[in-house]
Image (cartoon, rainbow, N blue to C red; front, side):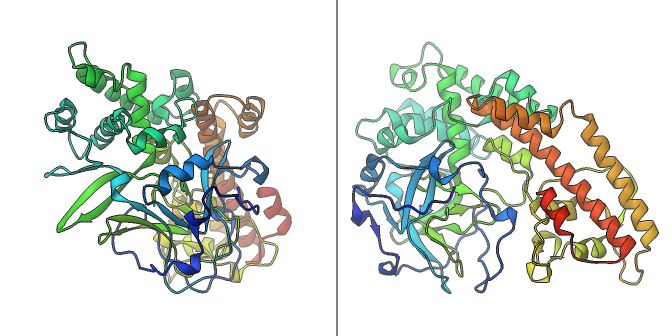
Length: 488
């Protein structure tokens, strides 16, 4: 998805030189979107987990964003430095327009004022931004009837629909750049056929319940007797469910401070919502209370090349099913995905980690590429997931017995193969379906990808256990390049 071409900007002054921006402040809030600061010295190349989620989107498929996309933000004090927005088959993305050398402190690449955000605070006193809810407007009663902790998406959807209806409101213009119902991957918009393609009945039932919840909320508050000012916001349930899908997939949950008031809030933040997800992000969000602005900042010590995509981590430590529930996408290299083994077989944890040069504590596993051979490329996020999910044992005083380790690994392999056999389709058949239907519905494509990624994880764990058996038989040695190449 990276691009090396420069974007001709309608307003050159919108993107100032990064060297002219001296607002270098460390993050001061804790958010599930915020990533850990990268080490200052990073000289090893990233392995596949660090790559974007859309590997099939080439540079030639990306086009510069419409000039109006920049204009409507610039006149309302949105500022960006050294980045450009591009649009492809999978939607918008944010890309570096110049090289960025690593610094000891984070640096700002985007500033968005509070006045442009669509925001609902979680607790009393309510704070609505923008200030578009007139006193006595019935939408306030609808929002006030919800549970702030569990119905945040319904509340934010109501406010978003109201923003679309307000004359001369920024969101009337920005809404033209949001994905339509046909372009959105959220499973809230999936048909029953799409949900059946997940091959995961538990996830399908969760999404059916969410669809029912959104539809019942619309029926309860958009009945025939409601005033026209409410009815015109969502004349049919599909419109409201789309708004809920936008709220879920583009909302940022964080703590913000306005004056002396500190509130946990749900925010729809224009321009920042165009940042895509990565399990190894190069950016994070930071609230600047003095100016009531959200800053998008590059991690300290992060080196950026021109054309690199700027990314954030949407949710840390979550399995693919959670990403599907909220965002409608999954990944075959999610390091937090889990396979539930039912047998009693266990392998030695430290031996398994040493074979694949995995270091760190379980919550912070990473591939130590400095210990790896030059041609090794087998280890990715799926292998880190295997290290977390494969049943293991550990006793520093008791070394592993190779014959028992091989037997246990073989038993775990057989269970992986059994789980794969239980699926009605193979990974090859799933890939063939995707290749044969390039113009399929986005929700259908997301469902096929989800089950494909689950099977690819099982295959990767199976391959990792095979390599582990060989290491127990012949002694620990670098991963064979031929096997690494075929596995990826």
